[in-house]
Length: 139
Image 1: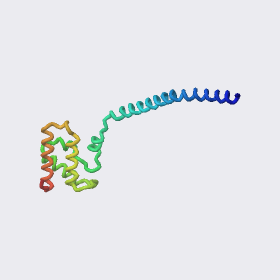
Image 2 (image 1 turned 120 degrees about the vertical axis):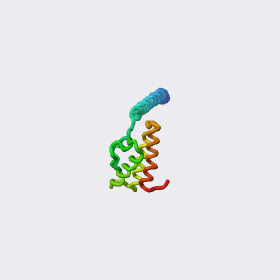
Image 3 (image 1 turned 180 degrees about the vertical axis):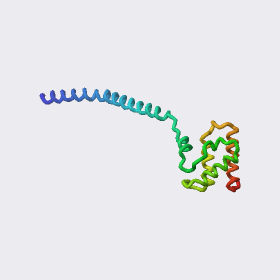
Image 4 (image 1 turned 30 degrees about the vertical axis):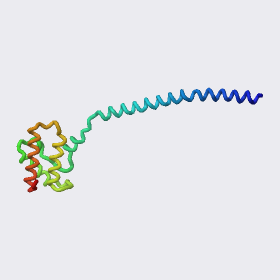
């Protein structure tokens, strides 16, 4: 009879502990949820800062040393000649001078996006045609 009494007491202790399990799980789940929310909030703040990798490429490109303001020149032929001159002088490029010059021009057009006026975009697209001409490439 005594052992039954001890077992009953142990069972009561265990049942109290088992009734705490759902409460502990709820608290642990809430803590985990808060942790995740804080991490996502921190990532959102970090990601909301604009990453200007394209600006860095334009300013510090290791491929071509461009003349200052080359893309703002008024004459498409002048833009093409400047790009050709820069590409042919560069010894750090990995492709042909034509490919390097065309890549840099296309990169600038794509990165400028909606910031380009229609006239600027037209002038730069004509500069592509002029670049083909000064390198003797046929479209």
